[in-house]
Image (cartoon, rainbow, N blue to C red; front, side):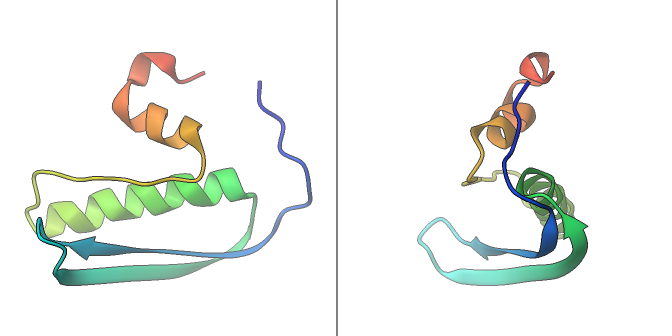
Length: 80
């Protein structure tokens, strides 16, 4: 079990969609009342997947601060 230090706080998250050669396509952002950073990362990835689906994207590349978030969306057998 992973324990995060610090208190929950106000948070924002966002992402940028770029094409295969790096050209800007779209972005998104949102404000969350009170959450810990790990939860915010999960919200961000879920929102990115939803947005990508609306734009009919089939390939995604995620960069996350928490390895657990990336693992959760790439190998569902490793999620605690």
